[in-house]
Image (tube, rainbow, N blue to C red; front, side, top):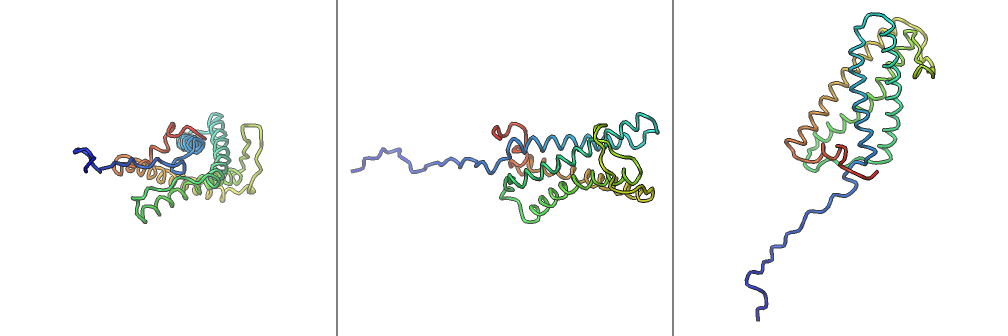
Length: 200
């Protein structure tokens, strides 16, 4: 005897599995990402602004601010790297191919490398040019090199070149994030936006 109703269907729709915590960034990681992003872009803009300023007390003050900010970013880069080693980032989307994954990991690696190399090159340049760095006008940092004008000029070129490389990589990073959002339609961008995760 058939006890099932005539309109019975076996088409059972299963909702997709919920995203696990490992697929999201923590609130701490999101905060550090955006703070560092704003700080680096602001410091880059400040460097462009001060480059052609005539020698004056104002230029010396701006240079001091630039060095304070660079030293602060160097310290924060250490904290961020330590956090990344402690709290592994989410996996890349499954649809990404091998070459794309390599480029993504390489770009992130270069970003971290430059977050250390750029402040360090500026510190070396300042030491070689004979301009001590006094953090926040209170804490003097040791000179890493003896005064040497020729070496200072070389390090200035290196510092500038590293900043241009950083600008190119950041532009590529932004372009990739936008492509993921508007063309691939995955969550690579949205999972890093503030408010995408509430817990730490």
